[in-house]
Image (cartoon, rainbow, N blue to C red):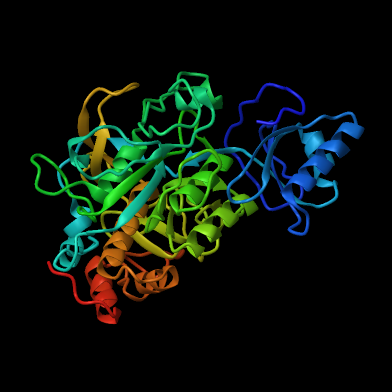
Length: 449
């Protein structure tokens, strides 16, 4: 970290408006991502901006360079305005908190209707006649993962990208251990009046994608023979935009300073959200991932608003996923509209829970206790079903490109079983029809079942 001046980091809560020279926010922040003109070298631009700030009596603290481009500074709002006026600066974006796209917890569980129901299921068993995801890799950028029998042999080495040790609860910053340490809060934490138990959100999402088949008792993921790379970007009070952007770059095979590289995954799942337009920071990271051949799937969000108002679902090239209720209609909480690509079951949020999405979690209210299963509801649960389907598609045809993947998802979606007057994209994903279409169009031999 380059310390041009030293001030303590401030805690920032949810709320992000982006893609403007200076960004206003509901909460005070002192972390800003600064983007410079491409004609100016990063080092020269950074030093010139810092020098200009010093001349005005406002020393800047340069934190680090982001993998997707942009420099992270610690500044006050007034200093950010001055930075935005500096030569070569094209955008200044607040590094605010990213929140989980949302899951609503119900402790009851019975069956995985969303996989096989003839009316509203995604027809996963039909796709499994051809492939169960062999050879495909999914990165789940979330709260991390906890030990669970469903993940035996299913996980590849991941990474913890949370830079704030207090948010990470693991005593340090970034490290090679993506274990979820719990995101519980006490009353008064994170600007909320009431505390909340740990969500184990990343464990639930990972189970939807890749829970292994054949264990008892247990569930089955959409792509049970694929692998997941768990990437921890969310902790206590959420996560940082800068950390998520770096994680996207890393998971897709890009270089992040100080972190060992990895081969690109086939698809990244983002069950998280930031209000507002797609920021330059997020947009660049996603564009770079897609350029390296990695598809990006994101939850549309649970705000019951137009999906075009929530990032990263509204970023160019992202497969944005709305949620359907048990009857096949748009779930009441789901975001909607032109920004949605496709829909998948997200649950009805009913009293009994059996109309929601069953997957793996830990049973601890705070720290880890024991692996169990629970029903959650939300677009966070719909998105990993699509990510799992993308894994099946990549398994069926490893050469299929990111644009073709999106086109096949759209072309093979089926009409919604229920109403969605505000727009749920192309319809309900159909795993069987989509994988069949990919195989038919592929130049590769048909995989063995």
